[in-house]
Length: 244
Ligand SMILES: Nc1ccccc1-c1cnco1
Image (tube, rainbow, N blue to C red; front, side, top):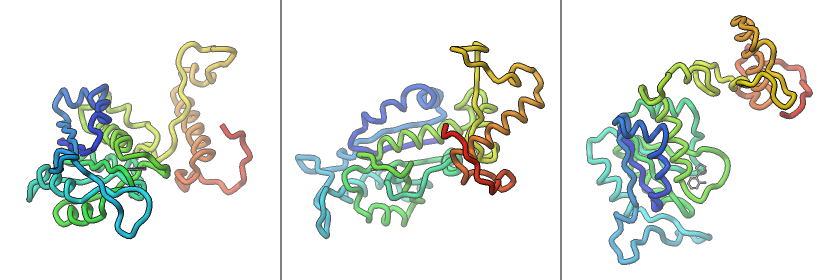
């Protein structure tokens, strides 16, 4: 898979060269290229923004550099998916991560300031698939942090990136874990600062352990993310529980 990221702060994407994604790049599973948007400017000051039409505070990213960058990175006839990072985008989730992991080419546009001129997405959509994507309901200074999150989330789903694919199976939000949050996990020592590992986990009884883990996952999901509960697990009674 080829991933291109365009940003005015390309060094912000340096962490992608580390750890899991870095290994995938080294092994050729992912071909990553990070570009400086200013390389597509032509004035002495390498200007990428201007004042907003209609007035208002802040600056808007000019369409020309983005248009030229996308012309270069996505030649006519290329099958590519453009992700524009924006707080007003569709919520990023595991389903989208799985979709992206199957794409041959992904280009990620990291906007800054008050955003990117809306015509960039409009024009790009005439020749590639475009998604405006948010990683959550909070405000960042730019799309770079969102790009790091999204790339990590889909890169780890690419076959061969994670050593043991079984570890993907029981993760929170993974499709085959029916959307429950992950159960609490423990390791040695069995007692730590007066806190004991739940007895069932030391029992060696796999059936009981599986049942206990499912119960804890349901309990946690009901308490923290009731909207994720599968219908079969929903209960109407009001449960008053400590907020943990
Ligand atoms: N706040 C932002 C500012 C600029 C580009 C993306 C974002 C963003 C993406 N997901 C949440 O916020």
